[in-house]
Image (cartoon, rainbow, N blue to C red; front, side):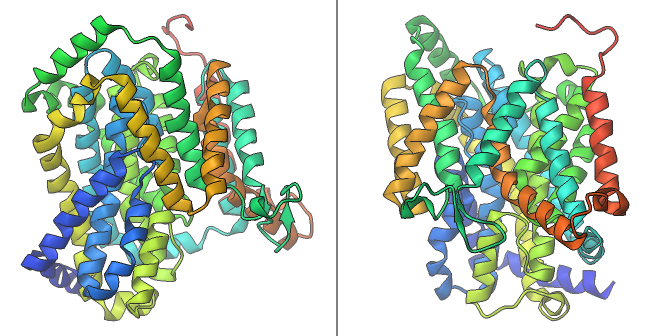
Length: 505
């Protein structure tokens, strides 16, 4: 109880005017960077890293936590309005939100995304406060074979979730994993698949792939689609006639989604966040797949499901709380954003570890408080104040809109990588993704394969090294066996025909 009392007492610093101001500033910055394709919360914190030298550690951490939460939520804005996720964790939101946007229900989609983000973010912060010491110990129980099986679980589930195109989903995932092998070997300082050029030794930057496969390819798809002036005009009128109350989810829709969906998604997101290297993408993917598995309206998934939006957004925002556990306790970032936040700690002379939790609760309290209040207050407030402006993006003519997006995306690609080569690769991946989309291959699994590929390979090779090449280590390790059994359960449940279901489209 001493730990909880000390952290809550430290959280009182959040209400100091200067600290509160940095939290609001961070939220606004995170919302902007999260909503603009090509710009992410990771980039925002990285760009502000030199600025934190002049800040008090409490102010720096509060601002970073607020950017983290806002960036995770804001990715759903452009994912819904123009089908370009502002962050990788918003990919599943784009699948459902954009379908609702095309049906004229974009305001409802944004409302449900914000509501689920609010619940997930607040629950994740509370879980971080209450169970950080316990969850840190549990995370240590997952050894190398277990981490491999967890990643295998995520890959298999998402591929199988591509109903009607499992083979194409698997091909896209493998292609993503192949792209991830370019550069320096994950275990040895040896370049591979660089094709004799020094420019590819550094590998393919994640931002280049994200911006290329989603922003650039979407621009090309839109350019190949003839715009119907009547439809655009109707969308513009509808957007301008929206009231702020239209963004508020109805009680009937929330009841249809169900309390269990919100709670389960928040727990999944937090649990995934605790595991080092998992991140918001895996949290959203796994939660979305679980929601689709148990839903009584699974036929709506992929066609504009509010339940799918709620599951994905609740999980990726809850992940924010979980991701701080390995970073604060062991100095192991839970995702790319906490990796940059770790830099904030280090440059302020703070060393993560048990001593941070025991002796510097004056830092932990405001950080957790920033996550909680950003989710519970600032997310719904931002939607209420700026929701009509988010939705009106559809009233902008396509040529200037996508020209501006292309410019910002390429500039964002260069700013994130400071490499002309990576910026050029952004265009290359855009063309590749455009061709894949025309052929019906899901770019979601391509991105997932790229993100998880290096960890998949590393934990596989480490496990086999430790077991002297014996693959039975994945069955004899209890943590690994649990994830393998979960994989089998999810595959069976997702591929089992549903009674009373309609014919496949």
